[in-house]
Image (cartoon, rainbow, N blue to C red; front, side):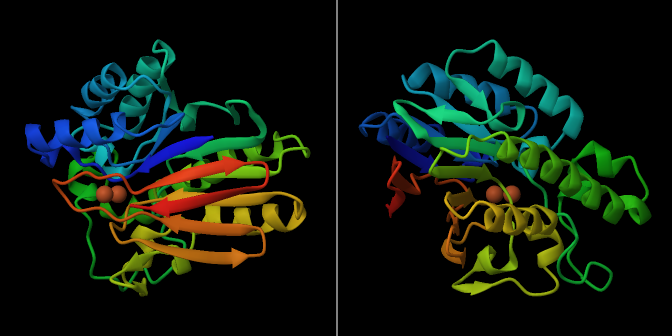
Length: 276
Ligand SMILES: [Fe+2]
Ligand SMILES: [Fe+2]
């Protein structure tokens, strides 16, 4: 199984020619599928972009949404619209809405996913000077008092964690390799910026800590399975080996210039990534 991984496309910031070049670069690769780990565009454009992709590529597109995908809309409305679009499509698979997916003719390799959220469970939310655009561009935060934001972030992380846990628990013990696609790094150790990991100020918004804690506990209880997390959000790449059977790969990105992050070869023997 050969998969193309790409992340943080921000296609609303991308010139038409660069967008077409990027799609062409994916279409020209021999692959069985594409994985997108969020920030595809913004809420008013994300479905149009997904449909363009679906019409341009002949392979399944597995994706999650990132925080930017909810801009100028609400989280619930955007998810509902994307769920609807993906369910009526043949090749779009919104992983937040699907269970575990066996990959092609490799029944021992399974893909699951969740949007995830910077859930304010890591770092120092109270003293952080960071105020993401999310709070002003996503209706859930826009229309609520700032005193409720931390609670909302916690809740979004908890909901993503609970959904992902159910999916992971449903995977047959016979499965050897589990690929997890999510937008936000689940650990501070996987939250890269210029070769270093996050500090106390950024961690509340750039780490989905509850999801990370669940993953650590789940992977310890399933030592015969290997878990590979693919994530984005920081726009800086890196790899964090969290335990013998849990590795987190964070993808790089630059606004306006979507690229292929890497090619994944997946079989029951292993999941390897060649970064482009
Ligand atoms: Fe992004
Ligand atoms: Fe993001």
